[in-house]
Amino acid sequence: MKRSLVNASLLAAGLFSLSTQAADIEVSVTNLTHGNHFTPLLIAAHTRDSHLFHVGEMATPALQKMAEGGDIADLNTAVIGANGITSTNPAMGLLAAGASINDVMLDTGDNTHLSIVAMVLPTNDAFIGLDSWKIPTEAGTYTVYVNAYDAGTEANDEIINGGGMSGVPGIPVAPGGNGGANGTGVMDGADNMYVHTHPGVLGDTDPMGGASDLDSRIHRWLNPVAKVVVTVK
Image 1 (cartoon, rainbow, N blue to C red):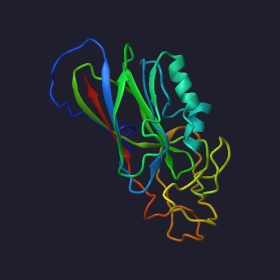
Image 2 (image 1 turned 45 degrees about the vertical axis):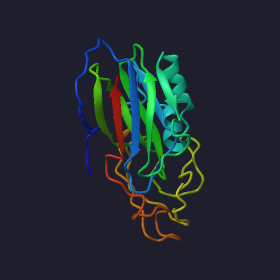
Image 3 (image 1 turned 135 degrees about the vertical axis):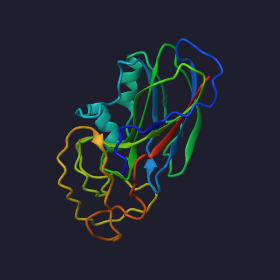
């Protein structure tokens, strides 16, 4: 498993002009997983001092709501309150494995950094996270590979029970209809309560029992889980 926080490969496709700050950008996001979905995306342009999350620190209540239940409303409110610019739910729902959302346009104005988050389903509190990536000032196309993080707010028991409210154990749903039932719960012994790189899910191959309600043949992943392409105009 790759352990880098954000494994970024900047592939500049030509240098056309120089500018003093970021302006119009076009963003696309691709789900690189084998069988997981992303909940509605939050794409945000903001200043260098703003963050949607901090690796190695405890999750905020707003981040917990997104990571456990896919609710991006409070994070969006925080960005707007700090004079940031956002695109909420550009895919108009879930982003399935292998699918992309393209041509998301942002007029960043004076905002210089980009962040993207969404919950990974089916998981307890995993989310894709691009944290305060500096938007290049040179026109061109840039690719960033993004890892999944664990919010550290809920045990990864891998039980699908309709949970999703903050502080309520369990996984809301397996959107592909390929989850199991009657799992006894995974006991991974993890006690990291801070935002950290997600270790991935264990799963099993017993759809009507076993420890996990997740299918190890479908729901396991290796980082990175998403590809982000940013075109600076």
